[in-house]
Amino acid sequence: MNADGEWGAAAIGAPSSGRLWPVLILMLIGMNASIVGATVYFALSDGSVATEPEYYAKALRFEETIRQRERSAELGWIARPTVRWLDNGRAARLVVTLSDREGRAINGARVTAVAFANVRSGERQPLNLGPTDLGAGEYEAPIRIDRPGLWHIRIGAEHEGSSFVRETDLLVPDPAR
Image 1 (tube, rainbow, N blue to C red):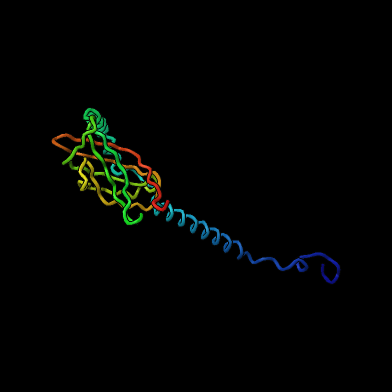
Image 2: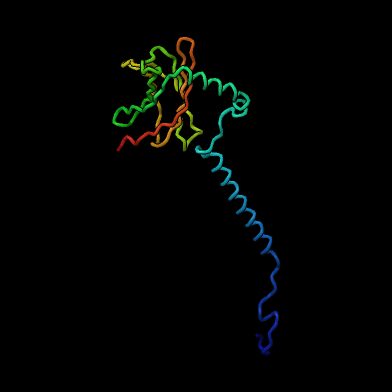
């Protein structure tokens, strides 16, 4: 209300110059760009999200994969992976025990493995396992285990012209417990 008791533009305040809206719009665009940038960063840096390497080529060769699994089943070999903790849980070794269908140890094989925690499938560890001092079909290699939980192990073995593959999950306990 002015001095004459009337309501008017002078009583409410001077009209805005219109500069507030462009600044507000630019601030919103900047906020949106920041959110998108953070989302892209976290999506690309997250090790828990990964695709199967060479998945298209593997899909094209899937019938060969099925035949290899059938040949492995016919061999009757058994591969049992375990984790052996060393130095009070500070270091670990993946141990694979390889035996035939009668339970006899298979010694002298060339054994490989690919291991990864299911929650970090992008962090795969290819391993070449060598025979242990115990023999008895045991093969081992150092493995970096940074978290307990479910690990996926892909085992391959070759012995006397025979080839064997197996994929399995291994529950790795916390060494502190």
